Image 1 (tube, rainbow, N blue to C red):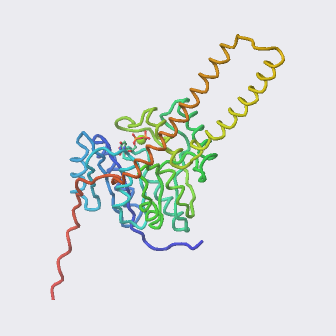
Image 2 (tube, rainbow, N blue to C red; image 1 turned 180 degrees about the horizontal axis):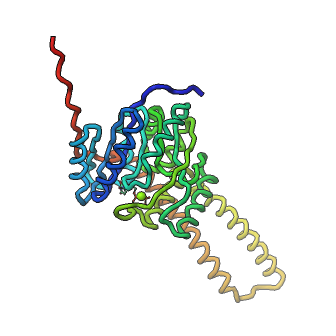
Image 3 (cartoon, helix red, strand yellow; image 1 turned 90 degrees about the vertical axis):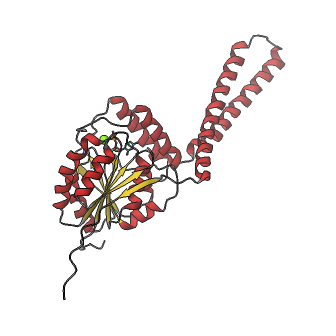
Length: 324
Ligand code: UDP
Ligand code: MG
């Protein structure tokens, strides 16, 4: 693996949704941490249709520091799309997406850069423990990772979010993925390249509350599974074959019984049970088909992933032209 000894431009991409209260705290920690790296940097802040003073706060911060750029989306598109917007605008040779709530410590970027210099293209941050989640959420997370590993062709590294450092090559690959359903964790894993991890400690959110409740996370997990695997779609063929096999077997038994012992009228329960069971199975499979069809419809419509309302950036005051 060839090492890198250049000074890269570092882009940090941060999506913001109703985070006004935390912006001051974020930049008072982020700016010194990035300055300490000794490389040129820019921060691409995406305002994902916030309804509070996030945009005004961001603009104020960006005015004071030309390295900070603000992308204002036309409405709330969701974190994954906001991040895609930021990644498309980032100019860096290395890019780090991170959350606005300081759950991703900016100091960890130093360790990531070290690994990047060693020659890795993706350095993801692995959290040492999950914070702010109950046992039910942890159980669901385990089940999700188990399903994802077994059903899709790319394994997801455990306890890894979007916080990672990526080389320009990787970002270009991600930007060229056209799909509308943006399960970023899956996309980052799918593109491949030389990947490695570093450990970090995830802190509690300092200001505000998480934007994702349990239902959101469940939907997100289902999105991830269906975007990276066709198994839920195909499994009904297997289930159908099994049920038909069993039914055929049962029909044979009934025919033989009828031939030997004649017709016996009771049979209400078995009829009811099989009708209800099969009805349930059919509705479930229709639901899954519907979900994939909806996804195909979304892709076919070919709408843009997000719409940018305005980009705010203040160029660095250019130096005085040299006198002759
Ligand atoms: N976020 C966003 N759009 C949304 C929801 C969240 O841009 O619709 C941003 C949010 O401002 C934060 C990041 O995504 O910077 C992670 O959100 P949060 O901390 O609520 O998620 P959690 O850490 O609980 O997974
Ligand atoms: Mg958070």
